[in-house]
Length: 424
Image (cartoon, rainbow, N blue to C red; front, top):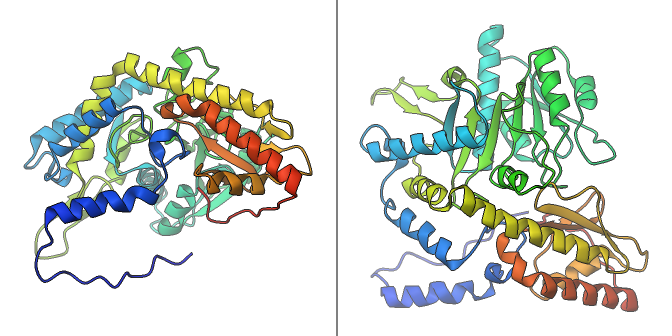
């Protein structure tokens, strides 16, 4: 998929009046997906206008500062990060001596885990150019392969069990003496289900392998869903084999993008995480993660919103999110010709498929999108992929009605659709 071609615009000779630009900004958004009214399954994580106002205000207070200067010229940013790490350690059951870094998002958090593991393996094995591999289920997020491509590592993807979960047995079969990491999802983005993490943790301990848990989607949902009584398996650092985990604060932690955490069981490994370079005239250049300049507003937003919501606030948002999820699943299962993949209920992601040969599920997706309901699409099995956020709850009945009408239209007309390779 090529990038959007240039528009032909040139830098104006004179400045454009702000009133004109503000009006154009508002006008350009008119064709964007309506995330306030539940039309978007991901990308935005909106709860309500009150929280949006607080997110914006906290970000704006640090809109100019560069978080690369934390601890150097902006001690307040350093303090906020330390507070965020402490809250993360408590939330994810990290032991005494744990370490963390603040990143721009899930992709950078995953990159940091893989890079830190690789550099540690190079040092401990005395192989500065070791030909290493990482083992993960086929449900692992592509951010893993992006990191591996940059870091010159092989990714070995293993089959899932009948419940769409990566297993220790399949992973063990794919490991060899060059394996340095096991990678598991909590939950996986395609299916919204947790890998067999207790077994995988045991495997990591037995084979002395780094285990990274990708909780970028579920990290700020799962602890609160569990406290509300949902059947969430053990997944975080309460499992002794978990070496690192990633969790996005800018998803269901409700911070402004980009804000994510990478947490390490042992802070000592972070000596392999940072980047340092001195062979230039300026002096030593050091960054804690891959990124250089970093928006301090994201740090301020995360720091403020985590405290503003607290556990009770997160539980309220999670309650709405999980209720919307379960109501959608129940409603989909009552539509003739559709079925939500089982099991479900471990998070706010699910997929539904057609059980009627006369109902092409991609044609259903096409109709929904034409009516403003942007849908994710699953290739294997062919289905509609649905992420759920708290703001979807008031629109569950509207969405189910649209699905029902789309199914009837496809069944009556015989319309066919096609899987879109670039999907949501």
